Length: 257
Image 1 (cartoon, rainbow, N blue to C red):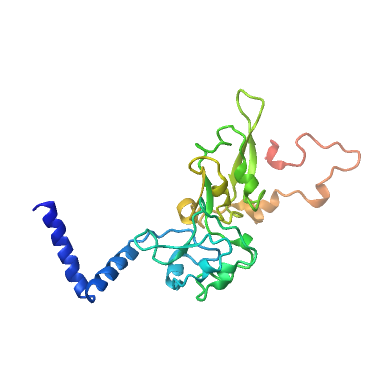
Image 2: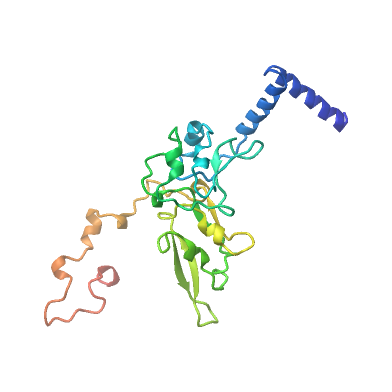
């Protein structure tokens, strides 16, 4: 069967299916529903958004958050795209979240798809910044650091770390992202000077692992074992006239254990 006949047959089948859904309008709606079912499960949502499945269930596509966004960076997903039709999202490279202190988009939501439990914009977790160290200018040894300077939570979400270079006396200053403070606003992605941004905001599920509850990191909390290696308050300073031995009171660095 020729390609044209296959296309014609497929068209007729879809028309027949559409007739069961009230003719041409039903065919269009059927197509949109199929697009919805294939929609990409990840998107950068406004501050306070519920988890993706819960958000899609609660969002009524009213567009109030888009209307009330002062810099107008929020968009509604169009038909035929990868996102559920009519749901709000933003693209950091063209329009990052400017982190309005009063979070007007969240307050405009009538259904709770944008949770009112978010009290401070600094606590938003819209996504997580991830650095491509192979194309980041700072990681290549050039002085850039724009993402660090532009970050609204500078020194918390993005810090600089010095790395020595083998043949040069000058150190590299490379940016590091801290997931416990990054809001996913995308200002760093917007500011990145490379042709394709070397720092991207991605959904947490795409970039973050989970260590698992069966790992017990004893050094992060007090237990009977870790208490045994703590210096008693009265032993913190050497007695008057008594010289402290080399290595101090760090028991783990002595050869007595």
